Image 1 (cartoon, one colour):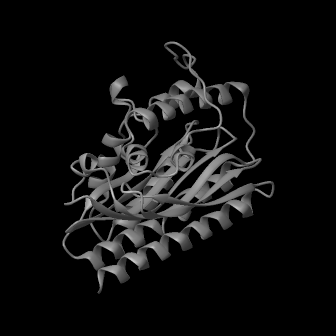
Image 2 (cartoon, rainbow, N blue to C red; image 1 turned 90 degrees about the vertical axis):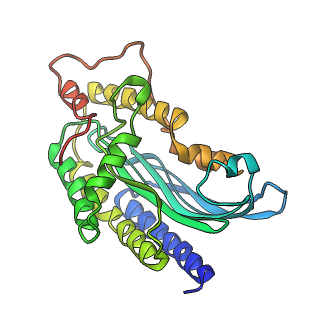
Length: 297
């Protein structure tokens, strides 16, 4: 297949997925307000370099969220180009990136992205999905990982992608403290069979809705306590630490002249920091804290 046709097919897929996820969110949160923001960018040389569609959400169930698609291309900073996997100083990249921060602490935060990148004579895929819960509903963690285990079953990659996710989404400046309970993550994926690789990434991305929204539906009517909310806000603070200190996607977006607000939409509307914070001993939140390390699901 012609590479340009392949790239366009991938971009059309993520735009359709963006619409499906938006529809799911609207169905669950009748008060949901959506700010739809088409944007464009210049490349490093000042020429038109593509753009994207940001959807920023705010509602009763979903406190703040972003479901974004983009397709960017053109010249990039030659120094930054050296840090990538391809050759030369021109790049094409398309994908979907989302973050959902619910208001109810009994519902986890979720992040996912799926992308295709072409630089010079090389191209590759990356992405995945990970869950950040604030309450120890272990059956939800089993469900989330179970969906991704099923999605990866045809490729034999679940254990590898799970370990990559556990290792990557980790606040390493705090030792072994994951920002959540993981999921799957992969980067620089290229077997040499582009069509086959793209089919796999599309297949994986199709499982996001199944992995997350049943958990939302199960927990959305649960009551929560002020202690639950306080714990959630502190853990969101850890989420901010990861995104600003370690997340390669944030750096990639900023270094390629992306839309700044679209990149930082991953940050929660509210968070909290307390010096040497620890959950109350013996509480369910202390129990939840113990899950922020690698576990077998």
